[in-house]
Length: 166
Image (cartoon, rainbow, N blue to C red; front, side, top):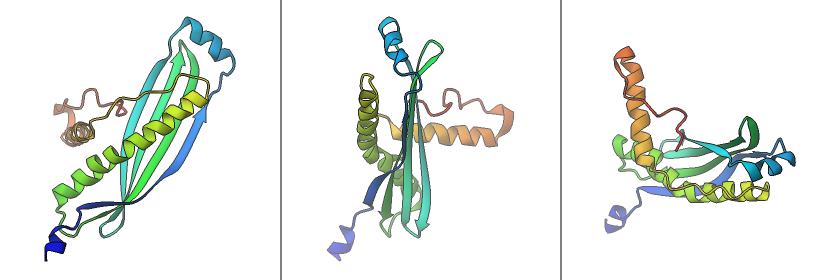
């Protein structure tokens, strides 16, 4: 019985790159523009879970980074980094949501961040150094925004959620 109590609530079975692209549409002229201007970088983050079986899920962490200098596109990096995870048999609905929407992306993020940093460096730009993301706050903000949309025009709590820029 002690073995049953020690069963993990979350197991990451595998993790992988699901989709990945890097576009550098204005090379090589963009490198000269970088000397006179610093790129404006917009990063968006999405977490999308899909139930595969009873307690098995695929969780996709989608990161999009777009850089511009003035009106000129410098780069667009897109990465869908995913994991197949299993949840323990005693996981309730509230804990399931927390594990899938917060804990799994928290585990995936360092790997995805490294891939995007390598992409930008290999594309001739300084590595994109993304800071930590508070996935719990991101999840709560989106949950509140979704609840606000369901309530109609009275809800104005979703300010600043946009595309999930972090």
